[in-house]
Length: 373
Image (cartoon, rainbow, N blue to C red; front, side, top):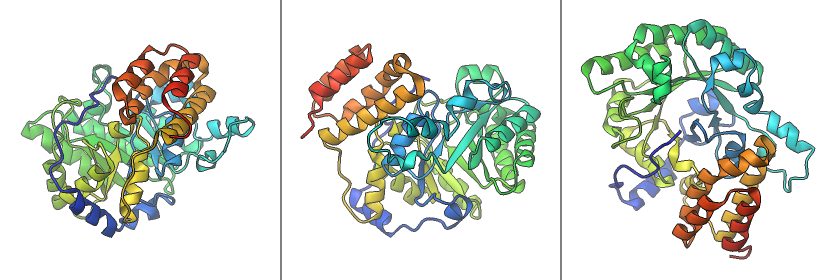
């Protein structure tokens, strides 16, 4: 998936105010009650093409309490395709347990708590996909009614359902009925297909129905499907939503580029928590820094040595999961984002773009990320 990786607009609130808010913040007790281990009000979103087991484990090393998989197609799950093996939350742990990876401490290679995100078209297939994810050991099931990618629209999935609220509600009912009561279900939505009044009405119809049938929370991205990832995220929509639905547990998403943005969104909109999406690609330190703010400490940028360690760990996990050839290709897009923290970001980015093999990759790290720096 190609996404815009630059903030849409500058943040407009003082860091001191946000730091004070973060220090005094107490997590909504419903969150850890619904999902034990989810101990801070932020998590790593499901990101197509990015949030595989390797990225999730690196995020957990850096303080992320909860992750969502990439959107897994119901039909792929039903047919036993790659989504079943590559996204099993325990597969990587089992494979690494017999390996030599130094410091097996990434959440004990325990990718939990985790939500399996399912996407599809028909209620029956979505229900079966959710059942399979439950059988695979996921702690929650997340329904994707948000994806704006063109091929998703052509196949009537994801954000398409914001134009057909009746069908969306049938999907929600089918998934909730297929999952044991002890497994929470959640839903990811955008604020509408477009900016029309009809589209907003559709949003509220689907949103309210999700809670009526027992969904634990909704994560709302306040861009429209037509916007995709362009233009500012409409945080005012989130604020109005929270005010109008005060009893609902709501997570927000959109324009979260640093730890302070997590708490800026919570302070400005009143959401109970925040889903960190594009802002955590190549930046797992956003979770460490967010925890630091909640502890009343100053968030610190990673040293080159810390960046080196994280890059090498991510590469190793990616190789174990995907094999060396595919991993060298996948890591290019991560390297571009990791390079933003380097003292010489432009040159480092250029070197990562030019890397074509794992040997090239490690050569960039040896050259640009000294051990004691």
